[in-house]
Image (cartoon, rainbow, N blue to C red):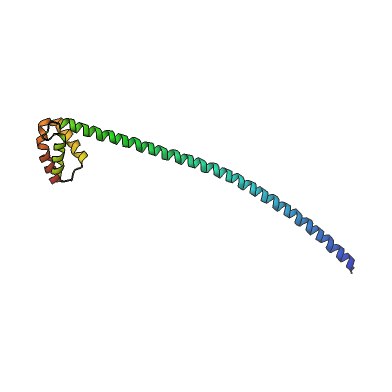
Length: 148
């Protein structure tokens, strides 16, 4: 039978081995935690760079869209100006001038035709049929609005 001293010695030895294993496990866990922390730091750095790249890309696209919109507005403004100036030139000899003709055509359309469309149509009619058609444009507009 084992003596008490031998049992105590054996328990002490096993306890020392257990402590050593626990210390080794703690070191391994700490090393693993450090590696995870380092990896997370690297991921955060990458995410920051990717986020910045996405932000720059978004800013570039928004800026391009704004520029494109600005160009479209300028082009629309030029088109409106060309139509308006063309109408004023072509309809200047109409009764009441260009303003009188436009007013008469707007009244004849009863608000169903946009002013820009009235000027476009009048420009085409005046170019194809000459200034004499100007006197008939309000009546033609009234007929067209009645059909629509």
